[in-house]
Amino acid sequence: MSYYQTDYYDGRNQQSLDAKVSAVMKSVYVKMFLALLVTAATAWLAAAWGTEANVAYFIATHSWVYWGLAILELGLVFFITARLNKLSPAMSTGLFYLFAIVNGLTLSIIFLAFSFASIFKTFIITAGVFGAMSVYGYFTNRDLTKIGSLLYMALFGLIILCVVNMFWANSTLDWIVSGLGVLIFIGLTAWDTQKIKQMTQQYPAMADGRLATWGALSLYLDFINLFLYLLRFFGSSRD
Image 1 (cartoon, one colour):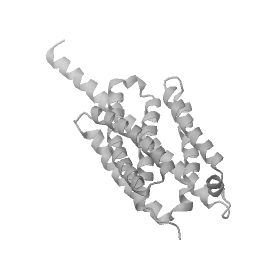
Image 2 (cartoon, helix red, strand yellow):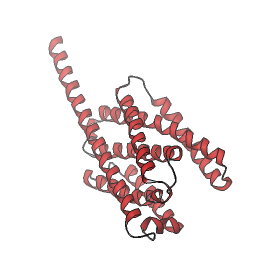
Image 3 (spheres, one colour):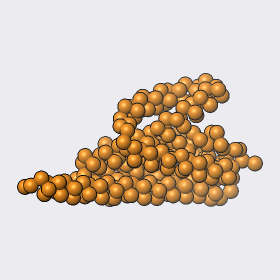
Image 4 (cartoon, helix red, strand yellow):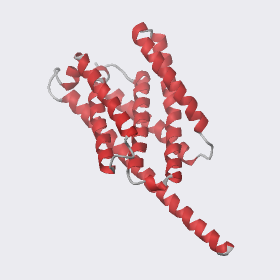
C-alpha cells in the first residue's frame, strides 16, 4: 500500500472515529437533559401535589424516608457503574431514569425551603456554568487527568467536612464547604466531559448506548451537585 493510500485510509478512520465521538456525546447530552427534566418534574409534582401535607413534606418530616431514598440513590449509582458492561443498553438507560426519579423525590424538599424564582434562577446559572465548562472539557487539548485526580481527592475531603459540619453546624464552615463544592464540581464537569470523549476514542466498540448512559450519569451528577451548592449562594427562602 502506498503512502497516499495509507494517508487516505488513516484520514477515513479518523473521520469515522470523530463521527462516533460526536454521536456518543450527542447521546450523552440528550440522555442527561431528559434525566434532568424527569428529576425536575418529579420534584415539582412531589412538592405541588396536595396541600401542605404533600409528598415533599412527608419526605422532609420523616427522616427514615429521606435516608431510605438517599441510600437507594447510592445503590443505583454503584450498581449502574459496576454492572455497566453486563447490563443491556436498554436496562442501563432504564435504571438511569429510575435514578432520576428517585433523585427528584429527594430534591423535592428544596421547594419547601427556597422560593421557586430563586430555584429557577440558580438552575439557569448552573446551566450556563456547566455548559461553559463542558465545552471547555470537550475542546481543550490540555490533559485534565491529573487535575481530575486532585479533584476527586478534594471531593473526599469535602464529604468529610460535610459529615463534620452535620454535628458541628458551623455557619462559616458551611459557606466554605459550599464554595469548595462549587469549585470542585466546576472542575469535574470539564474533566468528566474530556474523559467521556477519550473513552469513546479508545474503546469505540463500547459506544453502543451503555457508554452514553454512563457519561450522562456522570455529567448529571456534576450538574445536580453544582446546582445544589450554588443554591446555597443564590437561593432565597420562601415567603
